[in-house]
Image 1 (cartoon, rainbow, N blue to C red):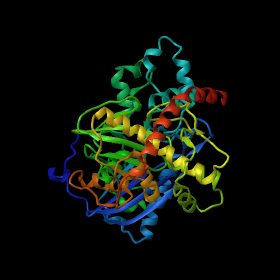
Image 2: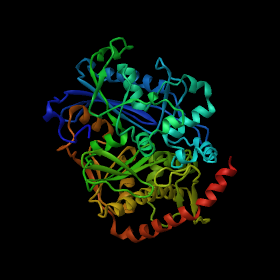
Image 3: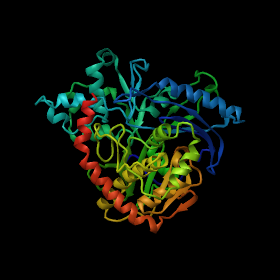
Amino acid sequence: MPYSLTDQSSKGQPFMSHVLAYDLGGSSLRLAIVDDAGDFLASVRKPLKISSDGRASFETDPADWWAAIRAGCADLISQGADLTKVTAIAGCGFTRSQVFLDADNAVLRPAITFQDSRAAALLDELREDPALQPLIAGLGPYDPLARLLWVRAHEPETWARLRRVLEPKDYLTLMLTGEAASDSISQTPMTRILAANEGILGQLDIDADILPLTLSPFAEVGRVLPDLPAPLTRLAGVPVYNGSIDTWACVLGSGALTPGVAYSISGTSDVSGVIASTRHSAVGLLTVDWGPNIWQLGGPSQGAATRLNWALDRFFPRAARHTALASALGTRRPVPLFLPYLDGERTPFWDAELRGAFLGLGSAHDGPDFLRAVAEGMNYLSRDILDRAETAIGTPVSHVCFSGGLATTPALCQLKADVLNRPVLVPKNHETGLMGAARLAQGRTCGCQPPASRRYDPDPLRRAYHDERFALFRQASEALRPLSHALARQDG
């Protein structure tokens, strides 16, 4: 392994007194200056957005991320932060998204983000070619190679100028340092494809040089350039560490990077998994090497907060969101069963043509019922992932570390504990991505279990209800799959 999940400071890497940490998400960029004790000296959130055609296309402009970095640093200064005292920069970001650059590192087109499934139709066409079928048989529309094939087929002018493809957080590193690199965890989706079929890029006539240099998450990629626009000039010469995907950083920051523990991160999308000391596999789940004796078994779904926002917009368009959510989660009567596949689904189905559904509707059901159904459906999907992972590993997890924006709502935390039938621990600092990025720069990866602000134990009186509902959820997901496909194709 290129890195070790031990305390890096013991190997000569000094603790960094003031780390500028960032967490690039689909809906926001968060920045903080973090000291050795893990305290935030200043923090800021800058909103971002992903544009969609309402169907298969999901894109965003990387220039917005760079503008958010500059504006966020200005906001930190306005809070009294002294950027000249920053001793390191490290970040994390959403993954399975591609930034397309030319020879001068100029952005060629909007970044394609993790939800995008436009490559599905192209893959179906290519599989009809006997020569290509063996090469792309295992590809799905969310795979980076499928995205490259889509750009080549649909945007030949972009393809002709393409010289480099980066992940979102790696683009920010490039802008800060002028160096293009990525980390082994972020590149897992591509390296898995290359390992399964050696020479596949050459056979598909794709230049391997468009892929970035891969380094350890702990590696120093470069130093902040001296000629960047203000206020980034105050960071000139500061070392920038490679970082990794937001999931890995959040797990590190929440204390879940320990075998026998599960994690759940609910932000724009939802990511769930189990940490094990040895390699395991399960149908529909991703097995990822996260360090020596650290294996992740799980994966991302298409939405979390976006699903709740969808329901709130439709059933409570004029109500205060926290009030509406509290009302919905307070009900105990049976509600419709919700399948949360509004934009297809990734883990554990990897099916762009899955569609959502409410089942068991009655004339008495109202807005709070629908909203609670959405919240339950999201958690049943998390339970499906957890159940598959625990079955593969052979032992149940001791608890679930829950982080992300939805972890700030106590009723959602209790619902997760009830549905998963596992204790749920919420860290005191909810910004676990920022905390994980800071620890990475400080070389701290072990012996740093953060304090939990609250523990939520499953309600034994709700177990039978959720066990029955979860069984129906699984049954309905499979039974409606052919209908979902037919409706998705009818929709065009």
